[in-house]
Length: 230
Image (cartoon, rainbow, N blue to C red; front, side, top):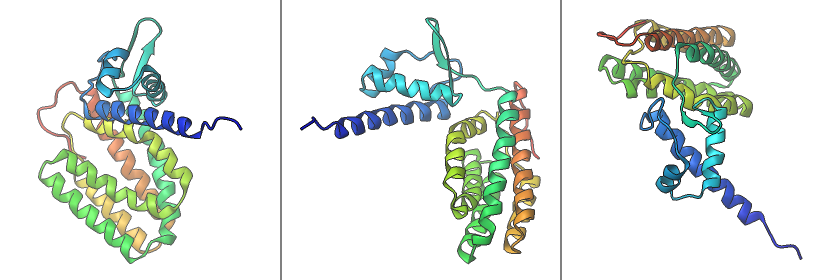
């Protein structure tokens, strides 16, 4: 009888995922700063893991654009630029628009209530200048459509971009969405409540492009005295 290997394979996958999540979250939060060099030994000591799962995690993070490597020279946290916003947000806009279009026929009273509550939280956090809470509420707002669309490919595509999105938001140099984004959320809710999937998708796409323009602009400015508003 062959020696079972299932448990060992599962364990390796778990260790890789543990390393990936820990390093990814540290990069997104800014604990590992842009340009910071990553050394295998230090990461292994920090995570209490062997080199193999750590290297596997770094390979995945490089593929996702969060780190960069030069053979025999360095592995470091990748600095994000305005070009990253120009690359990422149009794609996010298209995927979220698709999620909205697919979701609208599936929305009921519960989902519409969730949209309104998330938008109320978004407005309250924005008016209070709470950046983290503002973006978290925005995430909850759009997640209603992602969940309701019930499309695993949409979910997987967004999960792959999730870390880069949150890192772009964190590096936004203090800017918050403004009145235009609030109006766009309200338009999205109204069109979704009316059952107009095409119009909801269009409004969702514009909302993401608005956020992208804000993030791109703030990444391009070294220092901002007053928060920008769109």
